[in-house]
Image (cartoon, rainbow, N blue to C red):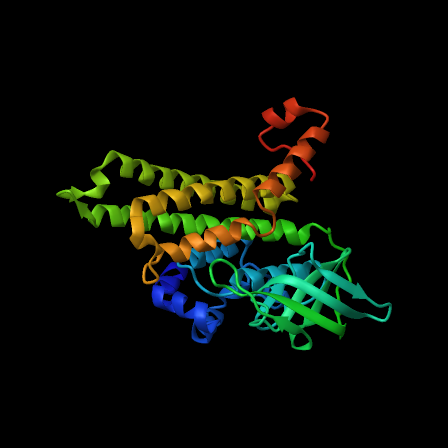
Length: 336
């Protein structure tokens, strides 16, 4: 059902128009009617119910069709809120991703001033979730001054500036890394879906495209691209699914960082292979491929790029008392 919904509702023209006009309200309303933004969050706190695996299904399907919606952000804001002991925000929500450029100050009486940078879908959302110290806080975005901006895929990435804004604070302390960890996992989920779609689209194109009297899929060089795309998509999907199960069991710090690193690297390989197989048509506005590959480039850099993920893993491994155990244990314990 989810796959069919996005296949029917998130066509190439809808995605292209969203880059110009912003959030497609009709598509968002249809997704809300099905309860898709909050799948994976408990009904008892305002979610749609379901497990983390159900949330993965929704986020991956949306990414396959380049759906121009803040689904991952709304879900992530809900996860942060529930972790902090707060109810799931109603409507569209987003998160402060923790940019090093953020400059935020809080007063003792609960007011906040300063700027959060690179906030996804800030102008479309009504609630901002942020992690300050060991607490989750919610802010009303109507109190913010919004500075415009977009990512490589034309999706909003904006600055939100608050001046003595009232915050709603969670009662439960949280791990300071909860935002970066869940954000990295969700971007990995989305990249796996986009890679699956790019692989399918490329295979279909080279099978239909005739050059020098035969389908280009019969040329060995093109076949290599198709194999590479299938490999990258399958590896990424497998890594994401394994990490989802690890998150259900526990913290999964190692799995999340390793998956974000591997999936981001695979995304770069996939982008190159897909565009080399397509040629010029892959970058035309009317064609789906560039909508997928621009998202892959954007998502690679969010919640930890390859350098950050590799450095984090390397430092943790170097500090581990037993490298042998890390290599031989099928489920190593590695705190980051």
